[in-house]
Length: 481
Image 1: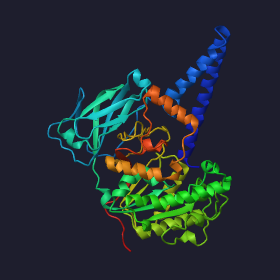
Image 2: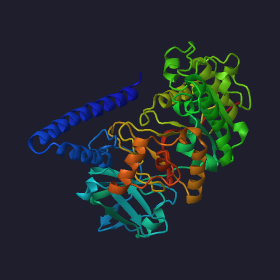
Image 3: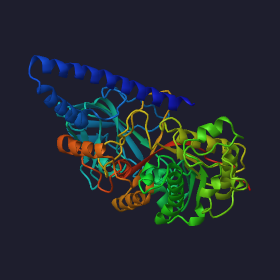
């Protein structure tokens, strides 16, 4: 198994161990209070302790909020000089910014005592594009604000930064990343599962001059919701896979992507790593009792190499991808980030595409990475739907990172939310425990529930920006035949 997956498992193991230790200590304290004070006191303290846990300590945060984020950006990235005077952020005289540049501002954020209980927020104001970006409760370290879309107001000296439940300290450092308009190029989004393309890149592919959506797996597992209508485990998994295969073909039509450019490869969820380990060995579904991918591929607009035998092998996956890359000839390839996103299917999807590209006569000019999941913080992007996206936690400065931020208008955010609402995997209601937790956090921690749907992805993905990372960029590429 690759290192990013093992790191995630290590973080989860450490988190659960610490939680068990805390529970044992709390239990000992409750027993002592019942013996020393009154029999009923442990019951009251247990209820209050549980409410406090759900309100303020239930986040999966696998690092200290006092840790500095550690980014390194490519050398020679422009660094316009800026100064923070009170709430005003100002450029040096004569410095002008490109309107559509991706702007990243590093500064120290320190929470107030209330910021340990209510999410600290940095408010951006002064122009027609106000924003709010949220950080960890108890934050006290270097963080990276996303100022993309604020170039004009910053150039005019009118941008104001105001901390709510936090203070902004130190001398800020600004980076300005300039990119071509990738919407004017031929885009292919690689989605390990139906909904990954929409979560990460709906704003990009819906505005692209030409877009392709390629989904690698049927996403058929964890179908308990469908068992509630009387299906057994196998039947529920097959129904869920068929529905998600339909979603992967149909939902991009909402954004204007032609049906002929939407492809579902039908491999099985959480089996890509096993396929990769034995490339010629078929690896069937964990829950659907299937060893043939063709049940989930029949909606495709054209035949692919894997349709010959329907065998779920790594070699067939590579052959399918090579056929699609040569047919579509994408200039911009969008796929999961190799280190930020720890989901095993996402890691394997990225590796499969790069392996399929080797030796092809067509190569993309740009490869962009996205992260729908994180190692360290399950709430990222933090804050409410409609807010901006600050850079995620990163603690390895040995690898330069280059962000690319695409603005998403309010109308496009609403369309994206509707697209997510069509995805069957995001429709089931939350379990009762999560509903109670969300209500407690709303009342005690001022966390507003998502506006467009119950699933937390409606909060995390429907934002005023989409954030990508430039993984590869060529000024020229091989495009013969």
